[in-house]
Length: 114
Image (cartoon, rainbow, N blue to C red; front, top):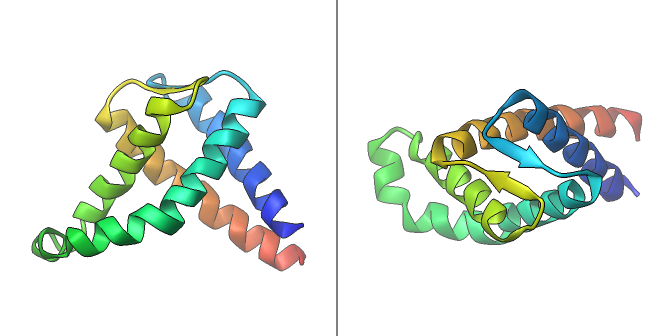
């Protein structure tokens, strides 16, 4: 039950982010839920592989390249989900940072509730 609550919280956060940032568009709750599920899957499956492959440049940039990986995954998710659009990489980078903050706050709040 908590995973459904987390996905719904992230979906609402994604809708809020789309209202705050002009370059990110979400057409409704259904595309936001699909985008949240896809972003979770990307963060669980693809992100660790990319972080290992880009470890040398991540070390050289003192970890800042991890933000680039997150932004790229955010943009990649938006590229094939209908109803979820990101204008360019910079909006994707900002959206991924805000989405990380929303997800962290939601996870801590949901953990306290359980």
